[in-house]
Length: 103
Image 1 (spheres, rainbow, N blue to C red):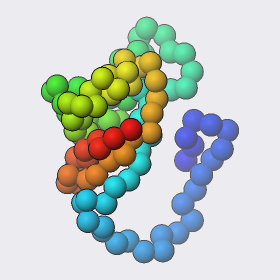
Image 2: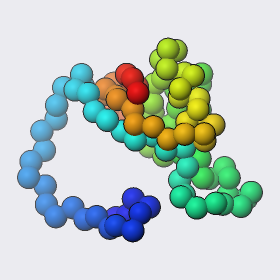
Image 3: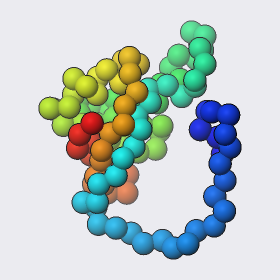
Image 4: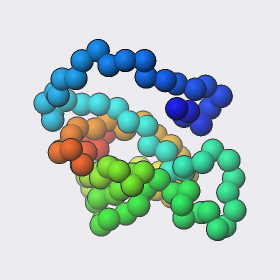
């Protein structure tokens, strides 16, 4: 697996699987672009990693729904517009949904 850099990563083995409580905070890097290179106009839509569902809910990489509270919308919109990438702090809501707590 590659993260878009020159390095490749591989999972050797899983030591254990323990589900933690939903209130356990975790970090996730939010990047507005799928590709790290310029794309032509025909690929602009598929290059977006965040897709709005409503005014406070977004789909990230077509996999996980991110809830964004009103007090973080201005900073989140900068990511949505492709101006910046940012590390976010989250908690789980359920298996499909996470909530942004702060940047």
